[in-house]
Structure formats: C-alpha cells, structure tokens
Image (cartoon, rainbow, N blue to C red; front, top):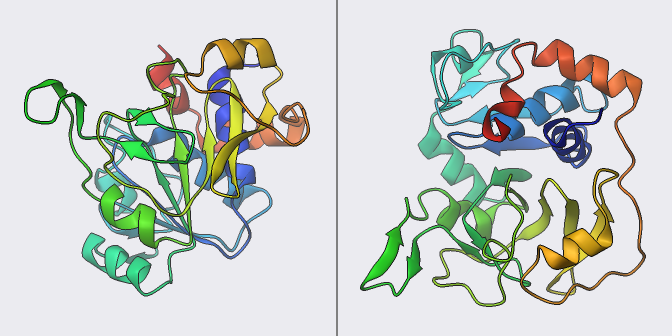
Length: 238
C-alpha cells in the first residue's frame, strides 16, 4: 500500500537536480529524507545543507524530532554555518530551499506568523525565521505541508510572512507548481483524486493538463528504505 509519506518523499526528491545545493530547516524530516533519496538515486552530486551546518552528512540516523541535531554534523563532510547559508542564498548560490508554513495562497504566499488579526491573533506561530530570507532569495523554494485542507490552502492569508521564488508545493494529495505567478495543480497523487484536491483547497483550482503523479518505482522504494530505515518520514502522519 502506497503511504502519503512515501509519495511525498519521492515527489520532493524528484524535484532535486544533480548538482543542486539544497537546504532544509528544522523539523524537516520529509525534506531531509528527500535530499538523501535524491543523492542515492538520480542526484549524487547534490550538496546537502542543513540547520546545524553539516554538509553532506553520511547516513544520518535521527535521534530527535528536530532534524537539527548532532547526527547531521558528526558524519558530515564539512561544516557550513547557518549564517553562511543565508549569505549564500542572498548571493544567488542556493539552488533550492525546502521550507514550510501554516497557510498558503494561490500565488505561493506563505503565512507562518499568526492566525487571525496580527494584533490580537487566535494563534501566534513561530514566525518567518529563515523563510523570510530564503523564500525571496533562493533560486527555488519548494514548500511542503503534511496537511491539505481549506484552512491551509486559503484564498487570503491572515498574514504574509514571505513571498518570492516559490516553484512547487508538495502535499499528501497533490503537487502544485507556480505558473505565471499563480499556483496550479501539476499532478494528483495516485492515492487521491482531483475532486478530493478541489474539496480540500480554499481557492479555485487551475491546471494545464490533468495528470497523475507517477508512483514510486521499486528502485526508489528500496533506496527510500535504505536512507530512512527508521521511517522518520512518517513521523508527522502518526
């Protein structure tokens, strides 16, 4: 049975090109596994950067929910501090940043700051942190979210934390891409349907061609199990 976490990890990995310099943030197990999977399959020359500063960690085994512990530095090829990642991105040297948020609109805007009025919010969120810098400056920002519902994909954001170089968004139901400044459906995962995506999205959907995301190959699933034997990619779905 195809699990959403496997589909998302594979879908995200396929967006990484060989030679890309790729960064992911804290609490980012799915993007981390996607980078490891890409390096193990079609993108061996991708460069993996992360919050604690490890460059290309070898077979990290996560010990916590942060995806920002010593396991990403101890077996790393080199150390590249986080402040250097921001500088690299602003100089145009960061090819891809995996980031997330709580709300997304149909133009790729991200809210990670508040739900409700900014001055009297219903919920105060962690804030932009690195997203506010990296989404506008990385060559490509790929967003991911394990929840897909109308409150997450909404016509109007409660607050615009960041807007910029978003190229794709991956969810348990589908993959979006940005086309002429607007979010459109790129493909629907085989575990979902266009009707389900439409009912779970708070703005009208557009697409160029209606297609199904190719399911993981046997080789991708074997590599996925090899790089993530502890199934950390499934933590947010449990």
